[in-house]
Image (cartoon, rainbow, N blue to C red; front, side, top):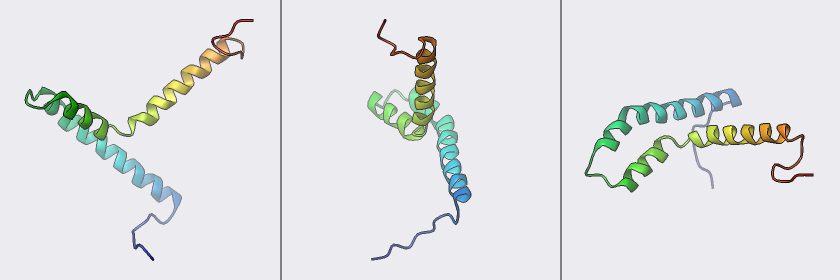
Length: 86
């Protein structure tokens, strides 16, 4: 079985494609989310779903921030576990 698809030719093209898709989601979110959040007829769960759908790539940024804050806490504790004291 084969599935024809138009895949990027190399890794740089793949990265460019992913960047375009992420940028498009953010641009759409900036344009539409204010209107979505102001609409009183929409339930909160719909607004929340729209936020997470349009900002789906924000999880990578949050993971980076979380890991860097953990690393800085680890370094400031002298390399020991954050919760343990010797």
